[in-house]
Image (cartoon, one colour):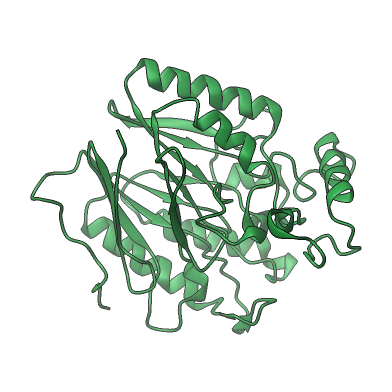
Length: 319
């Protein structure tokens, strides 16, 4: 397996921290298929992509791994959901270090939120899946729960489900709330397979970024759903990405926002100099190809080294 897309180093400097990344494995023990847009999907092969990723991360001695959500696919037979997710988790557990997970929409199609938090070992209060961690003094990672307000995952009569359904009814006139037909521009994000960050989480994020600023830490924000239209298709954005970015832009500590969900990947730099990188999906790798990477973090930049179908990229931070 070749790794020709890898960037090896930057000016001979040693990174402060190195970690592995992968997104949208969407494993299912079913024949290959296609997305609603006709893009080929390789449901069984994605597990092999993960296996090769874990082998490489161990070989490269990564400190930890971040999985950007959608660990199994929505087409997975529901009587196999738990066994399928367990099989994927078993592969992640071969990694010699901690693995940090986040919830994606396909996860929620298969298992209720409460069960997902347990099997993914996500720290939680009141069923929410946002948290932060600081592996070294210079950096803090913030993991957002993009399905805090969502029409999937919570019980049907839960206040967050009802709030999400009302939100969609006001903004998407289609009977199929996963259809963007007739929606224009950024309105096309108002789809049921997306979600929003709630008020309490917004306040928590503000507090975490204030703490990071006080501690002179740089911050990497992680979310399954992209946070910038320049890096993603409009149909994949967090419903209230603008509210989240308003908080992020109050501070100078956030240097990079990483995401999944929009399988083709993408990159942008927003008006405040924050990099946004959407990771290419492991699910859409034809047999014998890979989409995963490893990140070297320096004081002034992030260096993503990707395999064949994940583009390598150097992201230099603004001052």
